Image 1 (spheres, helix red, strand yellow):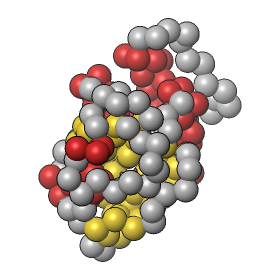
Image 2: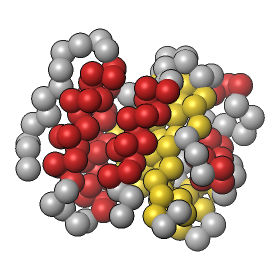
Image 3: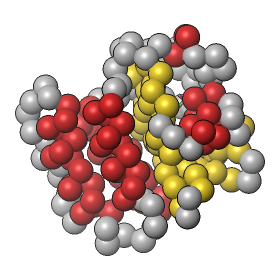
Image 4: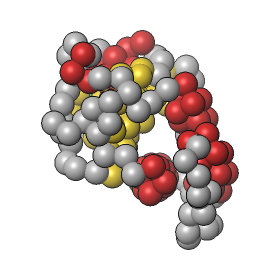
Length: 158
Ligand code: SME
C-alpha cells in the first residue's frame, strides 16, 4: 500500500482525479475494513482538492449516520429524503448543488459551505452510504466531479 499520494501538479481537475483514482483503488483493495477504507478515501480527497468537508454518511435503518470524514464537525443524523444527502439517497443519484442557499431543505452543517455534491454508494441496487463533499466556493462541482466521484463510489460497491 502506498503511504504517500502523488497528485499531478495541475489546475485541471480531471487530471487530478485521473491520477488519484488508481491510488485510491490500491489504497483500499487489500483492506476489508470499511471504516478504514472510508477514512482513507476522505483523507485522499481532502489532501488532493482541499475541500471544506468531505466524507461519508452510512445508511442505518431509516437514517443516514455520520461516518469517516475530513473537515469541521458535522450533523450526525439525516433522515430519508432530508437535505442534499437524504435526497441523493431517496433519488438514488448524484445531486449537484451550485448554491446551497437555493436548495430547499439544505442542512447547513457549516455556514461556510457554498456548493455541494452528494454521490450515493450502492450495494445490490440499494444505497448503503453517500459520499458528501462541500466547497466554500459557489458552483464548484460539475459533471467531471460526478464522473470521477461515481467511479470512486463504485470501488465501494461490493
Ligand atoms: N449539507 C448536507 C448535510 C451534511 S454536511 O454538509 C456535512 C445536506 O444538506 O444533506
